[in-house]
Image 1 (tube, rainbow, N blue to C red):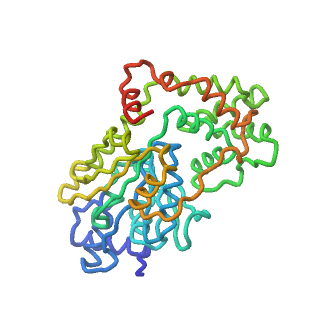
Image 2 (cartoon, helix red, strand yellow):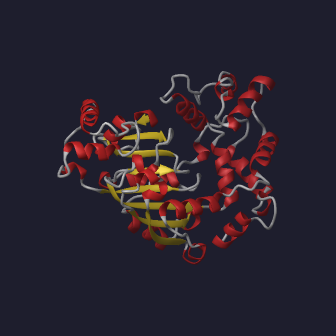
Image 3 (cartoon, rainbow, N blue to C red):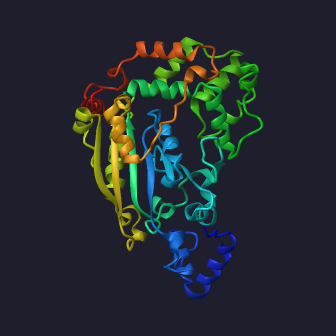
Length: 376
């Protein structure tokens, strides 16, 4: 496989300064620049399929993402909750990865070769910013099809899982790593005194944009010299996640239609446990400056996490993705909490305290109607 090093960046810039001085080198379609410079017949630019898990959090989306990425023939595989923040696993010397390093290295805030990343591959995490679009980093010059997996989950269970996930040493360390862009030496040690360590992270979570729950817990450790108890956690959960109008699935399905040209059918999800639809990404609608770009075909499957254990649904998902084996997901009972409560017990406390209707401000909520139409 041909490897394009960062020395190509200066060559490309010199080429465009001589022959196309009007080209904005800091904007749009880095691979298009490469292809014009290197030649249309270069075999390295054979189009591939982009595999994507696009779902709200705590729906086993990470499990699907990592299971999909085991097979290097399925790469690249990306994972996103919002189409702004992405995790991508791909071959370390792939054209996509080199394009990211050369043209969009300022977007990358984290790189990893964790145990779930195949040999010869790397995982990057990046954030679209400074006007860079989805079409810039995933240009249709390189990809001719996007396969999208989306999952739904009972909103009460999903929010409880989301909440409890922030109460572990692993989650706190991940938040700290993301803030620094690398694995920090000053992470919390699950084998040492949790309260003493929490106090040292108060300043980290005072910064804008950091985890609000971690901020509350570190402030409590410093100001009250204690870990959060059961009553504290019920109050925090109620204040943050109950009685709100969080349009999780209305927002998600709208983004899928807007971005992917796919209309999700709740009636199909209710009847079969999944919905398969087809569409296309028209980059000219995503970004007017890409008006000469062609569209990319989209294959989309949306299925209920609760139906995932049913053999027919599992088989359909495997047929759609080509995934052979599903990796085991995280087990919160095996993780060390940063609160003074057993997390499995806390899960049951919250599940008994709140029902579906209590999540929303009114029974006329459009979001509530949607999740009921899916079968929750």
